[in-house]
Length: 95
Image 1 (cartoon, one colour):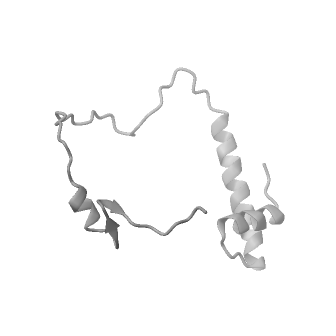
Image 2 (cartoon, rainbow, N blue to C red):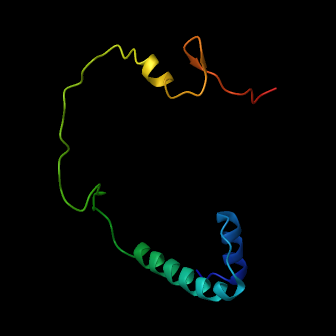
Image 3 (cartoon, rainbow, N blue to C red):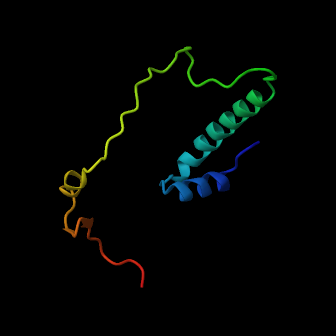
């Protein structure tokens, strides 16, 4: 898949990135090369290959579940600029 200057300009607009006209040619080539590389990956035979979560095989450390009542309302509300009756006070956003 080839990328043209209009596509680069559209992507830059969506990403809210300013791309100068003299940079568009370079970005067009770079994005086209990246997409060609990704297309090459699609040609690989991955039948029977299990998905990996890490390049190094490992098992996660397990810990015992501990049931607690939480009751951390005061600790959480200490960060609030304003609170009332145990809840955050925020400006009304829906009419």
